[in-house]
Length: 118
Image (cartoon, rainbow, N blue to C red):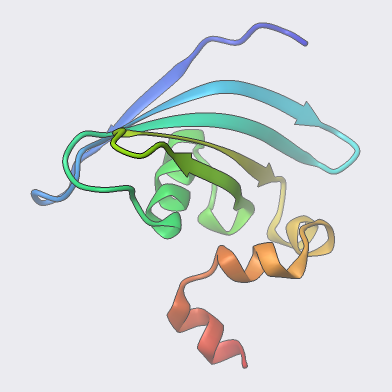
């Protein structure tokens, strides 16, 4: 596994939560046409961010469409302001739909979109 530089990005919109993102590891999986990323988000103001907020922040950090980003796991320890998790970034949304399990796909869409698709 090759060593990568850590990437950091902050998000602050109209007085909302300020979050700082660090990509801890980034590994390319050519067979599944995706990048597997382990991340850390520091959210000092407010509680744990929603899955949708994390997905949008990571898409902006990596520089891809939010439709290609699928959050697999995210965990915040009690009393902590740091969230650690895993995300898969696919080359295209179609690749993700063929590879990711249905329950993860439904977790990664906003509630408004999931009701429309039913």
